[in-house]
Length: 248
Image (cartoon, rainbow, N blue to C red; front, top):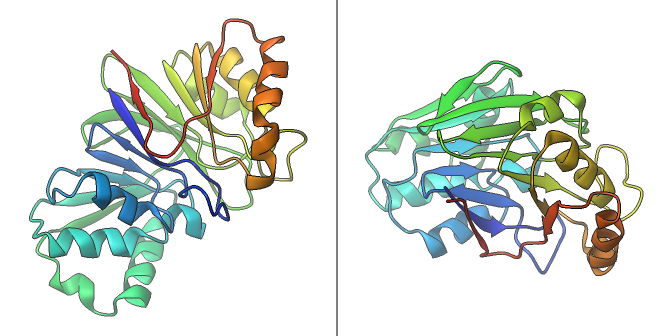
């Protein structure tokens, strides 16, 4: 399994794209303001993408979806595309499309299917076996586990860890987790220490920290070093935009 970091930043980070991940060139995890351009810069093919996951309905996680769909149409996509996410997804996607490009969805040469996911119910997306769990965030946010039969990864979206999320992440090879703060996080967000504790409890050996607030980034290495004293054996990485994780 290959996981490309199209973006690793928080909403207002001027130096990094919004957090967005591309798995094996076929499943996109979140599609915020900067994600569509990042996707097309690295992968301009029209028909490779099979699914899009939207963790929640904040702009830095979903507002580039209309642009992504427009770009696929311009590249003459013909394959159906599935967009999956929390309850309310169907209405949100249609509203985003109509607001961005009124009437344009009717011109797509490919079918667009929206699938609303219920937490704790297994589902399939883009050929992967998946599951979802709620995190603690200001809007309903679903973390996702993606399993290809050999490897499994967990992506948190936004929000503080929950017991349900930890159960879902159990035994994953890689956890990609929001770590908004290097110290005490604001309500509805995670921290470096909390993400490390989450990964260690889930039994993962590898953790990637994403969606770090710009003002917290300078203190991130020191916070990770401090956390390693409590979570020996946990491999913690701070990816940059364009970095690639390869599980093999």
